[in-house]
Amino acid sequence: MDFSRIKLIAIKEAQDHITSLRFLGLLFLLIALCTIQVLSEIENYYYLIEYYSNAPFLAADRIYVLSDLPYSINIFTGISNSIDIGVYGPIIAIALGFDLITKEREAGTLKTMLSVPVYRDEVINGKVLGGIIVIIIAVTVLFALEFALLLLSSIVPGISELGYFFAFWVITILYLSGIFIMSVMISTVSKSSGMSLIFSVLTFLVLINLIFTIGNFTSDYVLSDPIGEYKNPDENDHDLYEMSVVYNENKETIHRIASYLSFRMNYYEISSVLLRPQELLEFEDVESYDRTLPPVGEVLASMWGYILFLVAYPIVFFGIAYVKFMRMDLR
Image (cartoon, rainbow, N blue to C red; front, side, top):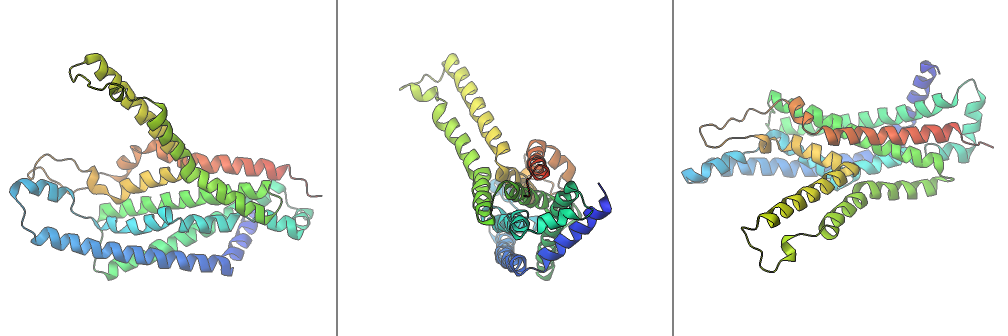
């Protein structure tokens, strides 16, 4: 395997994607939708600042007011909503990868490509690397434009918030790269680009919704709530209390496992922590209030399970795509 040949293939793939009208159109749509969301968050940011500055609050309520004061990083929830809930980012990732292999096979160019001095592993590695490069470029352009919009609105993030912003940028690239590699995997096992697109979308829906829905169903309907089995439960019943604790622990475990297995929930949980840092602050009274954010590394360390699965999914997808491509019959 020669890395120089991988680099050439990656550059060629990246150029093809960047100059394609399909990619440019989808990227423009994503930027437009994210801009609308971010402008809405900016308006909400200024509203909260003005509201908390001018509204009269009782002394007893000040602690609740302080706990909800906005940070500038909250504004980038608009990007998260567009990419995650709006699924506009995943659409671009799927569009980049669903026909990466099937298109070449249908056109007969894959066999021609492999007839020159280049190995199969160099082809698949170069194509995947090229797609990831395009995703990095697209996400960077999106984040740069939205950050510029923030500065134009006279909102300057603090130094600590920039660390959260950078971490959110990395997590977004990982999320979209995983979806892209998933669609490449589907492309290696599909016979046509049409079937690859259908199965890529179906697989994506399974990864973002079905697994988590099944986990919630299991915890809500399969596990039996011990308190619900008693018409008039005794609050002092120690055995009932113990059963209730076990029930809640099992329910929480199933929820956590379902969140780990849901690719979307990994991104959602991590981005929620990064974009709502005020929820990380701990203080008991107004005097002990401190707006200094904890180091971003400390925050991400507490989310290691979600990060692990966010990284593991692309590795598994690429492993399957690699093995399938290496064994592909091109006759």
